[in-house]
Length: 368
Image 1 (tube, rainbow, N blue to C red):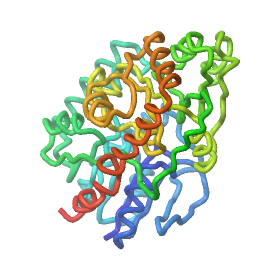
Image 2: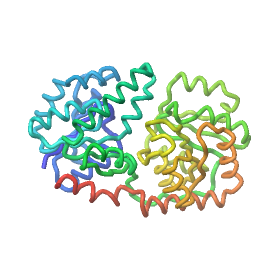
Image 3: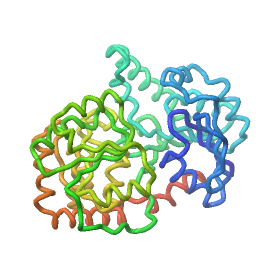
Image 4: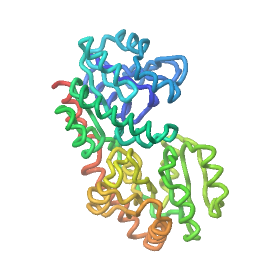
């Protein structure tokens, strides 16, 4: 079977799209093509053919215009003559419906809680974002059931989307386990955040927490908005903060091996399903896979399904720098317990939160 994945918002090496879904499909003998929009040369990785759609990466405005009708993208997609098309961006939903009308099987892979996310888009007036969110809900009611399947990243998002379609399935972002990472007990008193630095990740509050924990250091690895970085560098604790650009997985593992704990303190925002939380974030599972205890937001799902169940970290209210500081100090003062938390997190990954456990079920959806 020939399967074509479509994206304009994600990079070609996206962990969910390429490394989990495309590689898994190729592994069982399907012909797999990934069409992306990054203006890079075509290449073949592990048998997956990757083709760039255009001569440049699309801006947010250009991606939004695709909702009108992406004529050239439709032509390029149909040229692949795939049996199944799977699109990964809301901006491609009109393209998905067009492909359905042309007799193709189409899967919508909804990585985000789009109805809530739209209400919080910064560059839109509030009244307009609310109107757009309501329009999307109307669109979902009318068209979501037209697709052959809907994939999404968290059980609560499955429940929400099932009001629009019967064919909604949980496809997690859990890590691919290649080997068990050895946990070192020789740690610096360093905490780490790895990944894109979002406004909602409470970096200012974390630096405020550092002022209460004089022994602690903090490493931020990943892409950060220059203006936010400048603001963080003016804060009193900034001398104990190291900023590092994107690094290879091997180098990142070295930073993880020296860290006491990983931080992922996201706000109660729509994209995170507010106080409920969701399981779509790679970050918390990546920390656990590396044997790091986690200091994370007290989202209901994270607290009940991960932290309380496996005793692998500490939950804090986002924005509460005092609570963040207390969690950091606890990890520093109780290193043996922190080491056990790290081991518990690895156990949780090996038993429950891993791609291998769900891969077979994911592959079955293509035969339904």
